[in-house]
Length: 318
Picture 1 (spheres, rainbow, N blue to C red):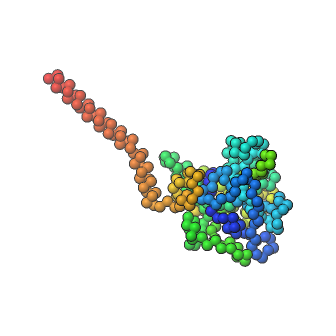
Picture 2 (cartoon, rainbow, N blue to C red):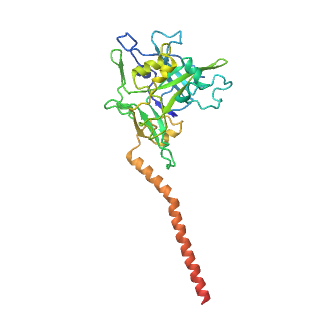
Picture 3 (cartoon, helix red, strand yellow):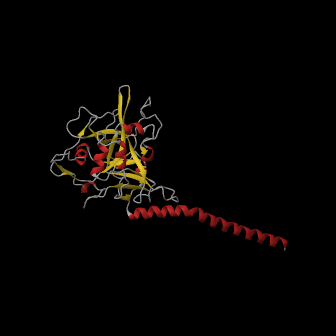
């Protein structure tokens, strides 16, 4: 699954990071940024993006008549598709739509029509968070930050090491972003218009199966990105064939600070130090062993009490 992401780049940096070469072009182009349409909510860079937050989403320009030249656009959208049949406030439909399963996407009453109508999009992120569910003995799930392998000297949890340069000849020279396949839809209720998206997930492969049974559908190559965004020339079935479990990813443990969606700072993606990890594990082990110690102590007390009773009985009988 995918329940939290991180994207701390500002609007201009996101446009640079999503630059591409249109077919036949000799220089890179930055996708245009479309205005907000999300009930007054705007994109705010954050290290801890949660459902209902607004983030930049990469889409095809084919459905937007007012778009300038270029095949790609960036549109801020809310995380969590709102069912088109829902009436009332956008956040009261009570469905969990932050993820949609690849296996049932075509047959879904909600996602099937969106896929058919070309609602394909790409969620750009510096990384995403996942909580380990494969360790059944753990009382507290350990969160991890997962991200694309970075270039030399670029440290994902230290923004001071990110070059983040751009020019038309060479394109983006900065942090490597993840490109996650998703679907988006436009919900309207009266004069309220909200663009919203869902992340597509699939069964984990050997890269992440040790952590969780599900993983987001990450587009690892430019061909995959091109095909997923080309809603005019690539039909849904062919587009889905481009979704494969990615093999090259990096990750590290982070603190449970990320558990609270109100925590948005860079404390969320900071690498947990070995000392902290050992201390946390030691505390957890000690906590788990306390009941056993109490059990031994209680048994000793019962034995002492038994001896005292027997001693008093013998004394009285004599």
